[in-house]
Length: 333
Image (cartoon, rainbow, N blue to C red; front, side, top):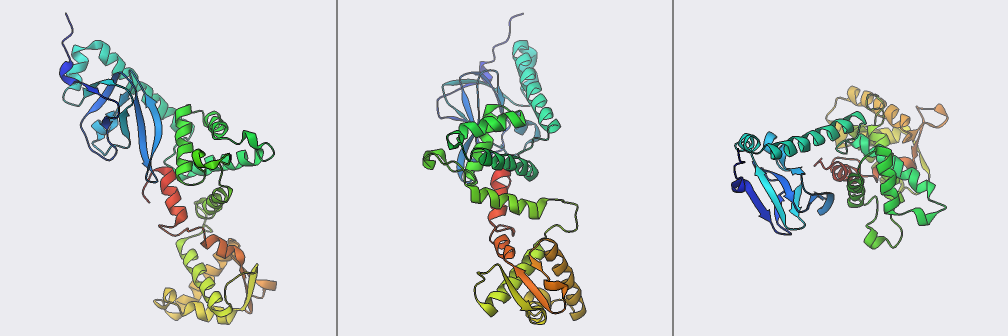
């Protein structure tokens, strides 16, 4: 029996036309029959290339199934012929056109296989723990190329990422693109040979260690620790001027009285404030943000410069570190 025509669900796209738009909800998926398309995602306000696809590749099927917004934009790079699929015509297309069904199942199986492999090797760019590993790798790469700067290129870094994480060149380039969007790497068109931003990279790794290392540990830095640190630093600078030395020595009773009289503490009974003060100081000491001189806790406290450095990282919700995490993982935080 001859195959039934399927022209009613085929569509041609001219170069520059959009098949799938990020953020939209649509009931259509597209099986590319001929031509080439680009897959891009908005990162830091710019379109970042995630992949280029061609004949027998399937796009948009996840959104058709779960009815959630598209996670990326697909645009025709050349004149592209695509088969339009949705839940109502999918069974008909597969029944009447066995060859198309085979290609469709093969494409979906390949995507499922790749997804399973990524889970097995713990590859998930939507998780901040993954970016800690990737940026640590980048830091090691920076150190390794210190005496051989001609090898410090984006192409070289992309290849290292591809090998270590066992991913495709397109996926590796997508990760590099996110680091560029987060200003951890500089745009190669503006870099003039320098593609790394060491300070930004080091700041991120330091902040990640403070906020995310040992997630189950009670010593993890919390938002309240940051608030107390900011109050302490404010009291010090109001009393002694801008902190410029490695540490500041203060009489503990004065510091304690000034801190406990701020709005952060006034909603608590006096006895509760005393307990919270002790708890916060213990945690800040564990993180090296404050230290007790000569172990005479009742008399002298030392404010470490590290506190000022940590606060400049923008660890609070909506701060620089938080925004960077959102760009890297593709999530609004």
